[in-house]
Length: 256
Image 1 (cartoon, rainbow, N blue to C red):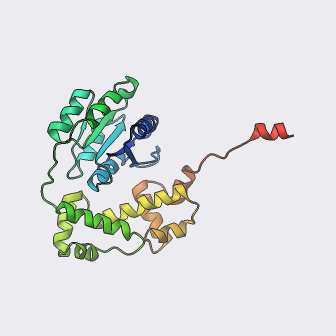
Image 2 (tube, rainbow, N blue to C red; image 1 turned 90 degrees about the vertical axis):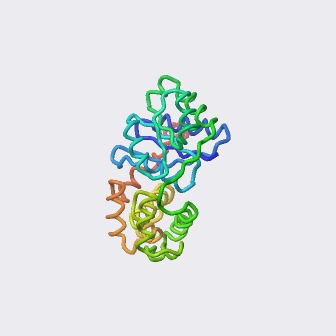
Image 3 (cartoon, rainbow, N blue to C red; image 1 turned 90 degrees about the horizontal axis):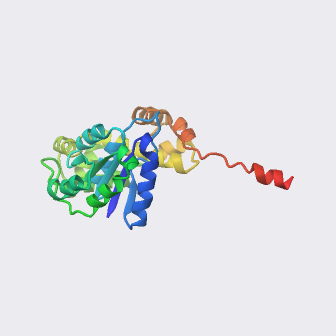
């Protein structure tokens, strides 16, 4: 089973601990929001929900000090049933009876050492089917997601997406928004930015090259969209995620 997990800044350490525990238990872990800082917009809950919607993961877990707010945000994504659970019984019933596909954990639960019991109860319970009402049929939605993912470096128009599933642009756009809570254009822009974040964290590729690789014609447009979605410029984002320089002072002193 694949689990999408994310947290706010305060819950980062707890997320890392839980991710390691789940990986050791044999679960596939998808970090939906690898880095959240105080200067970035807190969309971690939405990212977990979208991972589940896209079938990148079967279930999601959110760790936060604002659990009610995170539940509200995740539930805005159609097809997502997110709920705050403080005890194993609620987590078990939420999965079995309500089809809760995103578990929201308050940060204080980790301090009280009850979180692991809640997670175990949730993941060991079968999930009741969640039926999406309206919108694109699931197979069509997944086909659109795949097309966008495979063509981020190219122009992706609404006309192309509609053609992928054999629909008119108007009808496709209407159903896509019903299914995802966002327009096709907004979704494509967010996917471009998410891919750019990966490149900025993991490579030293020039900003202009990153812009081209994720489908922006100009670096200025890339910077504008990135700052609007993330809250900081691409350059600042890279600086915030550069690894700390490794200083070998003791070795140098020994050698001297």
